[in-house]
Image 1 (tube, rainbow, N blue to C red):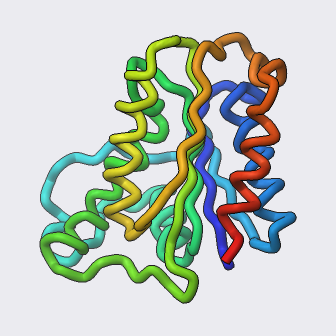
Image 2 (cartoon, one colour):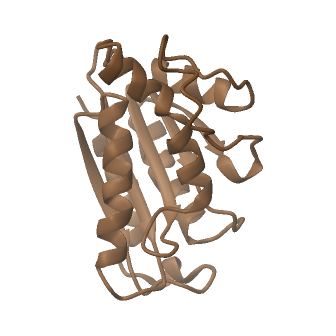
Length: 190
C-alpha cells in the first residue's frame, strides 16, 4: 500500500506540519510507505486554464507537478494537511489542487477516471486554523473534497482544529496529535 502526503503549510515546524508528522507516523507504523511533498518548497506553476489538458488529460506545463501526478496515480491513500487561510486551504494546497484540472478532464471529459488500485483509494484531510468559526473548516473541506473526488478518493476523514494559531499551539491541544496518529493508522487499515 502506498500513501502520498501533502504538507501545505509555509511555516516550518508549525501546527500543520506537526499534525502531518503524527499522521505519517501512524501510516508508517500501519505498514504503508509514504512519500511526503512539502508544497511550499516545490516549483509549481499556477493553472492557466488554457485547455491544454482537455484533449488527453495531460497538463502541457512541466514542473514539479509531474512528480505529484505520478505519486497520485500510484497511491492508495492521500493525505492533505493545510492551515486554514481565509476560510480555505492554503495557497500552496490550492495551487496543487488547481493543477489537478488535468485529472478532472481525464475523469469527466474523457470518461477515464483515475484507477483506484487494489485497495481502493481513501483520504485524510488535516486542518488547523486560528479562527473559532467552523465555516473555515467547512469551506476548506469542500475544496479538498472536490479534489479527492476528482482523483477517485471515494471516502475521506477530516480532522479540523480551530483556535490553533501560535506556532506549536497544537502541542497543547489535549487530543490532536494522538488523533492525527490514530487517523493515519486507520487510513491504512484494510
